[in-house]
Structures are given as structure tokens and as C-alpha cells.
Length: 320
Ligand code: BYC
Image (tube, rainbow, N blue to C red):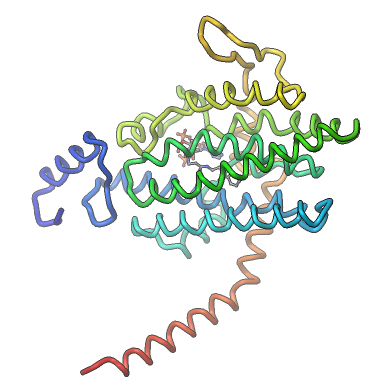
């Protein structure tokens, strides 16, 4: 739809597309707020994928076998790919990737709280696959129906890969829980440390979530933070039982009346601390990202010089 129509017609068309569950595409007119909220969410999501490579990459050099190393390398590489699709989706909204990267390394844009916790043993690799990728799937499958076309389409492939990641985590944990007592203790210890931060991935409770109502109205988000958190608990509690690990919540129990698991109070003060830059690994994660960016400067310069050379060659070759 061209931008020569009066603004109210464009807005009516936009609302009609949303109402009919169709997709907004990059060239369509969209309200500034819609564009802004998408850039915010997609950029944060992209940053999370890129920073999210670090906790697990910590174990690549110390994986216990060649097989586990190959699996972990492939998984971490997938996360890099997800980051790139998402930065590309943000670019279709007019964002500039260099600018987004700068905002991340200057702490002017967020990334997921979950990646500010340390990975202390190899069991953390399995628990991240099971819980963190499991939470990511719960949150991201509905985003395949997000109203913005490039984001929704990107999420389809990302979710396929995330569900593969979740299964690899679960498989690693099944192997470890069938192993020695020491291995079972490692799995339980990692579960104790990652459970509550995984619940925080879904964001603040609905009554403290400033963006949910508008994002739901625009169908950028399809469910509220609390709905998805509940879905995750319901999915994960039986998996914990099957694995033989205990989730560290004395209030976790099946509520037949609600048809859901009840669970305990989340420590929102901890969430706020981590999101505001004061978690156990925030400084380390950003320093590492900054270093990687600086070390990669020569690659970006070489790529730009190469592109410029080809551009000028193509220019001289083009027919007059
Ligand atoms: N950490 O109004 P709200 C992954 C921020 S998975 C940090 O509810 P919204 C991966 C929020 O941005 C992780 N910040 O916001 C998995 C907002 O701040 P601003 C990434 C958080 O957007 C495995 C403020 O708090 N997944 O990548 O409606 C391996 C108020 O929140 C968090 C995604 O990004 C948090 N946990 O809902 C490797 C999925 N929660 O911007 C990688 C896409 C909230 O107003 N994103 N905040 O300053 C979403 O679905 C939504 O953006 C959220 C938040 C549910 C996360």
C-alpha cells in the first residue's frame, strides 16, 4: 500500500491487516510506535542470541568427548545464525546493524537476563538446553504468528533449531542422570541454579509489564508473559520427574482445579538487579562482546573494501 494515501486511510488499512491476522511487510505503512516496539523487541532478541553464545561456548574446549564438543560447537553456531536472521529482520524496519551493535555494547539496549549467570559444570550445558531452550521455545513458537512478516518467518526456522537444542540438552541430562552419583549431583545442582532464572526469561508479571497490552493489541506478542511462564512450568514439571531431578520450589504442585501447576513467588528484586546490569556475569558478557567487536574490526574493514572494489568494477562495466 503506497504512502500517498491520507494517513487515516493508511492507519485503517494497517488495522484491517492486523484484525484479519494477515502480515505487515517492510514496505507497508505502519505506525511509528509499532515500528519502534518491533525494533526494540527484535534487537533485544538478536542481542540475546549473540550474548547467549558465551555461557555455553565456555565449555567447548572442555567438552568431555569429541561427540559432545561437535554437538556444542554446532549449537553455539546456530545461535550466531539466529542473531544474524534477527538483525536482518530489524534492518527491514529501518534499523542499522552497526548502530544496534553499538547500543548493545554501550548498554543502551537490553539482552535476556538469563545469560548473566555462570556455567559452572558441563551439566549446565544440558540444563541450558533443557530449561533455557525450553523456555525460549515456549516464548518463541507463538512469535511464528507475530504480525510482522520478516520476524514471524525468521522465528519458524529459529524454533525448529531451538527444539533440536532442547532435545540435545535433555538427552545429555538423561545420559548424566543414568551415570554416577557425582554426575547426578551435578545435574541437580545445575537445575537448582537455572530454574528460577529460566522463569524470569518470560519477563515481569503481567501487571508490571509496560509493553504487553500494546504488543498484544498489535499481535506482535500472542500471549502475555504470565501465560507463557505457566505453560513452561506445566511442560517442564513432568520432564523433571522423568529425569529424576527436583525443581527447587517447595510450592510447586499440581492444582487439579486450575488444571495447572502452582509455583512459588519469583524473586523480582533479583530480576531487576540482573536486568539493570548487576547480575553475576553482566560485566564479563559485555566486555567479551566488546572485545570480539574490536578484534573483528579488520574483518569488517576488509569486507567493506572488497565490496567497494566490486561496486566500482561493476560501475565501470555497466552499459552506458
Ligand atoms: N531479560 O513490558 P515487558 C534466546 C525487559 S531466548 C531482560 O514485559 P516485552 C536464546 C523488556 O525488554 C531470550 N530484559 O517487555 C535461547 C522491557 O524493557 P524495555 C531472548 C527483559 O518486550 C537459547 C522491560 O523489561 N528471547 O535468545 O513486552 C540460547 C519490560 O518488560 C526481560 C526473546 O527476546 C528479560 N528476561 O516482553 C540462546 C524473545 N524480560 O525494552 C539464545 C522475544 C523483559 O521496555 N521477546 N525485559 O526497556 C519477547 O518475547 C519479549 O520481548 C519479552 C518481554 C517476553 C522478553
